[in-house]
Length: 419
Ligand code: FPP
Ligand code: ZN
Figure 1 (cartoon, helix red, strand yellow):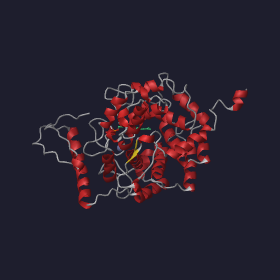
Figure 2: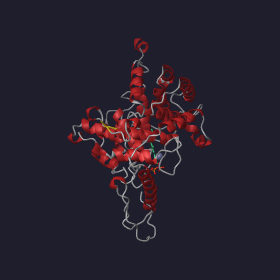
Figure 3: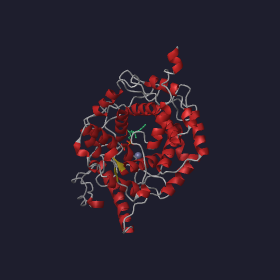
Figure 4: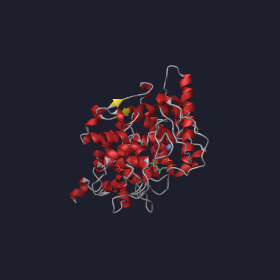
């Protein structure tokens, strides 16, 4: 939200032009804390763009695959003390690193895969679901991360770790009468839980109509006047929650219940006109991770509008500026030493590495089926594939779904039927 007004400043300098004539912020002479912060970010981004233009006469956009690979490989074996605060998010670290590696098309050595499986099995709770570390209480967020990590590994050993019967019981224990889910026993309700529950249930074939009765209708109540989705009904729209709400509805095949036009207007307005990356909410700063949370919404909205017979969709690139997003990620979010980050001046981390690379993939492969348009800035060496609903590789989604489809729904095993 806009910050409080600060005393009038000397006449604002004329807005300069960015790449491709992109316009900088015009504050119309009224400075606020928000506009000052925004101008500072634009200054740094302008410096990066200028340095790039001056150094590359024949413009090249390079994804530093090798550097990112080495950063990620080290993280799998050893983490610095900066990660101590993520001690309750260890399955997330596994997922962010493994997904980044699969995006880069780097194979996971068998021994590493097996160690990760063993570690995640120790995070699984006797109650069902996964905790943030061995012996921790189960929670839907690490449950989502652990199931995604195991599906990326995609071996029998990985699939067999998931106790589907207990997982279903755990999800049932979190379900609320109004259709929503709490994140953990005694915890808060928000739209992330609906996505985490729908994602793990659909991948492992434990999704039942009863488990998700009323969930779609509850998510739709979280879409607010802005057009995006807030954490709970009545809250400010935010990209993280909006992705979760939309992706959950896609899994539940209920996305048509949303006002898709106002959602589209909201998310496209979150792409920053100068930086090219996305902000998470109105009047906030660009951040590389929203390259996935926000841009990831666009193929989902595109598909939903197409299913409704929207004929304006044959040209898919009108939805957002895919080149501008790729420029932001490749120029402003790559750490020269490997790994990716929020914005220039910030430190790299595995979360931003995962979501910047995932967003890059989304910007490259927009649309689906006959309406799929590939646009890979810097050439095919930069190409990365992801699934816009689960955010793991499309082949790994198919593999997991086919694997678990062979297993009956817990409680409906042939021996139960015979009793
Ligand atoms: C605001 O952070 C962030 C939120 C309100 C929630 C973000 C939610 C997600 C990223 C989705 C998580 C998804 C799963 C699957 C668990 P901020 O105020 O620091 O950032 P901002 O200034 O960019 O809004
Ligand atoms: Zn971020």
